[in-house]
Image 1 (cartoon, rainbow, N blue to C red):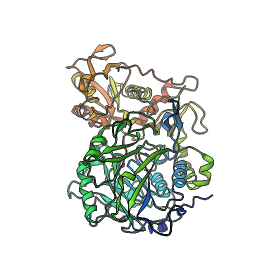
Image 2: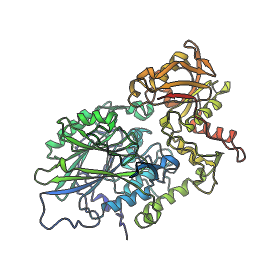
Image 3: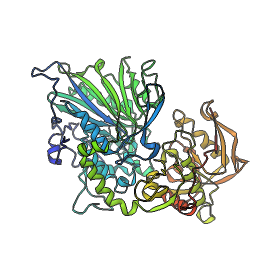
Length: 615
């Protein structure tokens, strides 16, 4: 059976539906070569046996969605590549999932027999990507998303990792301004789908840098999509990434454009919001509405959902990498669907929107939604996604000379992204590498190293990913763990400032969702989760090599440039003095692996016993 994917960009562009407000100014080249506005979406393959020749008043529109792909075209490794599923007997099973071949298979199968089907994404499609995509500035991922028939995506914070000009290139195409075209005779075509950035404006003009919304149309059915990223994006992206941009409140922005869509006669509206929440259970099949609507989820998306106008019929969210299908009451008190499909292409959400032809609105009581595992079935992928298999093979061949180089050896899995504990074994290893690399006087004289947990993008997995052999860490695997290539900084901070930094992990911007810094050997303290806010840090327990931290003393601290700039909600770290810039975090990590491991003496997983956690 053939999936019959569309074969040419020209043919696909003729089917696209990208209607939007005209005349919006953009940064640089953003406005050039945007997909055409007002074209109508073509039929998906197959017909709908449920529809008769006489049109009914309502039709069901299938909304397929996913979020936070982060360029994971190949199945993610280790525990970061599994989905938790609660079994009938109450036990929880970790199921391997993800990989763009399998995501394409799942989506193409789901569309079969659906007369009306639209596919949307909740942001962070690119950025923090494994080597196969990241090495080529995520051109492979955009190509894959085009082949997936993605109709629309919100921008996420990681879409800004390389700045607005590079985001413009992702939308419009063209070869990289420094590295040129990666494949001989081929120019990067850009995204077939529109990236929406309703709440991101040019500081000088005040205009959105990308389309704020788009309208999907098919056979008299029309649905508006508004896309926003979290207002706090500047706190979690490097300064260069958000230069010249302003990020606005999610609620105010969505409500503004929902009103505009309504005036244009678009009554059915979906908001794509790159901000999320945390369900009470890590299992994707958890009943989020038990015991009551919204009771099973917490975090920023709850208040956002409660503030967004009832004109919006459903919310597709992301950012927290969690899986949930919940109803949260809108300002009128009526339940409204809020969904998120984990991350890395491990899940997709299938939502049924019942569209009333007469009112041109969604019948909210008829909205149904569920998350589905992207099961790794290579035999099915051969049938449904040979184009994705070919894409992966092509880009892997280009990356192979760099990706396959051995860097070091490990004796077992060292969990990072896949660990749910505040202190992660891989976090300790990275911090130790930074301390050792920057401790020499001529390298900065570091006494302590801090690593932000969000910068750890994967696990180190013992099982070989290719032909290198079990336990070998390749350059590609190390890159996947730390893909940002942040430069290391060594700075002066007082003991009092260090304590404040620890308190900022669990207070202020990070109180609702703590960000626990990973610390180097010799640095210890107690984290008391029975308390709230800054009180969670037992100040008297903070020690360096067994000696209490002196508030007035100056310490040399190593960290990446993102943290040193106050990123991830640590403004006190910007108050540093005497900065010395060192090698990149990836180079420091690889140097540590090479120096401290061999086939005969591999690195063992750290004990993760530096932070004493009281629950």
